[in-house]
Length: 472
Image (cartoon, rainbow, N blue to C red):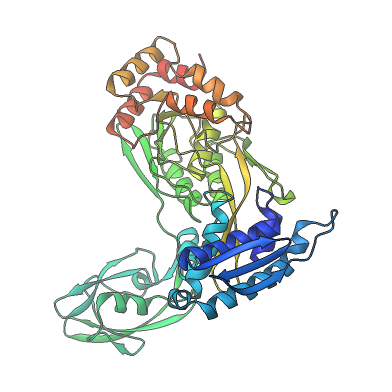
């Protein structure tokens, strides 16, 4: 299954034989005595002078799709893995999951830096980050006489059932916590959504028993505050509820009778991305319609155009987007869309430059395969991969350059205009020399106080903002 997915969807066009050989080399990483090779269409695995296993790979007709070779290649590869397992104590000590991981790591090392294999435990954690955790909406802490409720989510199952911070938890589903450490106690709280759990509690001199139903609790990914007359929105990640949380923050600021904010600062610094659909929705919250991004790859399903459908929930208020060298993936899609569409001024440094999209493929063992299958293009057609997003006002070259940039914008001059024009004219594949030259105009750096000060200055100067966004 996994080989078929890579052959069908990955951006690159490796042969089935190469995939098998690369995977076997992952075993060699764990057991250097193993020597895989491909000889005249036959996969061989040796240990010293002894051939452990040899499996011929059937020839593929010239007009046949490469995916047709996936199943026979997988069968051959499984036989060689089994032979390696029998012959190597080191592999048996490492275990099957470590073997799988090493095989996929070596395979993907030949393809791209973002495709990877997730073990079942890692896959569960990744799903929780994407869609939220199935839990009870409470956090335990160690008290003087055992575990106590330390925090409650306002709308979580525990809060709705009347639990209080400070309640002592005596047992979970009949398992007494007196002999368990905090990690073990917390693990008993976890479980699939829509399953029940019973807590036995002590509150003062009272003992009570409460039944709770686990529910999906989306993680908080948007932090909002009013500061200096503007709405500051810090987006930590792009998970399942990010668009809803951002829309609620904008509605609270612009949909009331109180004076609306004079502008919005969208802080994407340190945001490593997340769900593509969420990036499109977040960018769409500030756009009246039109293209947000395009994607394309070998697989027909990867060729898409993503649109915003409006309305602009910020009602056209000035918008500054903060990025830094850690801003990546979905966060870069948002910044690129808002800048290309003339809706926002980007401030900070060059972003990471991760413009490849991974398809998430569940595997029979509960793990997941993340396979890079498409490239992201900004609305004006340039690729995010490698280039990243360049700011209209650069802060990574130091305070003096930042001050000079603000002064130039106030005079009606855009200091990054030349670099941005070259960026938007770029088309894949972009030569490495051009990528290096463009990124050097504002080198990637970690976010700094100068970013927020520059955002304030732009919002306080309509002339500077208009120049930076391209309206002068």
